[in-house]
Amino acid sequence: MKKSDTLKATMPHRATVTFHTHAKTKASLKERPLGNETLEHCRAEEEAFIGSVKRGQEDARAGRVHNTDAARRRVTPSAP
Image (cartoon, rainbow, N blue to C red; front, side):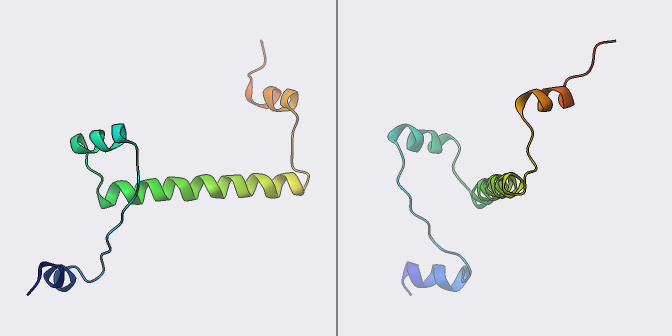
């Protein structure tokens, strides 16, 4: 049995991912290799960011926006 056949038999729901990166990044991966958990975390973070951008776009289209001064008043505590 070839090595590739063995991998398919033992890991039927897995896939190989190949990507291009900078030499410096590749060198750092030797210290901290990417695992499935890392990739899943990155993917989840990207999905959350994309979702927040889409919500912001929807808010802007619906007129739910504030100018900078109004936003600062909302987040800055008032002086006593």
